[in-house]
Length: 297
Image (cartoon, rainbow, N blue to C red; front, side, top):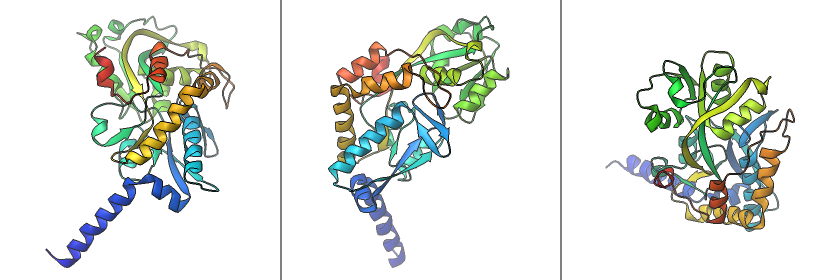
C-alpha cells in the first residue's frame, strides 16, 4: 500500500473519531450546529431573518444550555442549519449538523445510520383536506392526488394501512412541508398526508385556517425525537439526561402548552393540539424505541 494512501486512510480515521466525540468538538470550538426545519409545524419552523422557533427548537436550546454548563463554557455559539427531509440524515451522519431538532421519526432503518435521543413527542400520521372536499376517510382517496413531502415515511405508511387496501391514488411531492401544503391549498392535491402536528401547524399559519381540516383514521403512531450522530454515547447521555430532567420537572409540559396551545409567532395563531396519552407515556417512561416497537402495541 502506498504511503500516501496510508496517510489518507489514517486521516479519515482521525476525522471520523473527532466527529464521534461531539462534546470535545463543542468544547474546543465553543460552537455547535443545530439542524432545524423551515415548516415542521410548531415543532420547528422559521420566523424569518434566519431565526427559528418551535417546541423542538426550544428543547434543543435548553439541552445545549445544560451542555454549556457541563463543559464549563463561558459562552456557546449556536449555528442554525436549515435541513430538509432528504438531507437531514446525511448531514447528521457526516458531522455537518451536531443535533437535529426538527420532526424526525425514530425508526429501525434510520437507527443504522444515526442515533436518537429519548422520545419527546409521539406523533399520529393523519390526512389534511379542504373543509369542503367531502373527504372524511382513507377509502375516499381512491383516484385522488395525495401530497406528501419527499424523504418522509407518510405515504408508505398510508399504503400499508389495512383500510387503504384497494385504494389507488396518485402521489405528488413537495420539496418541504410548506410546499406540500401549498399543493393542497392550490388544489393541485386533494389531500396532504403527514404528521398531525405538521398538518395542524401549517393550517394554523395559512391564510384561511377554516378552509382546512384534519380527517380520517390515524394512519400510524410514530415516535418523534431529536437526532444525533451514531456511536457517540457521551453526547447521547448528555442530551438524554437534559431531556429527562425536563420531563421530570414539568418543563416539557410547559413547552407543550406554549407551542401547541397558546398563540405562537409570527402570526399569533394557535395550533390547538392537545397532549396525547402516548406522548405522556413517553415522558413518564423515557425511551428511544423505534417506530416498529410502537407498531407492535
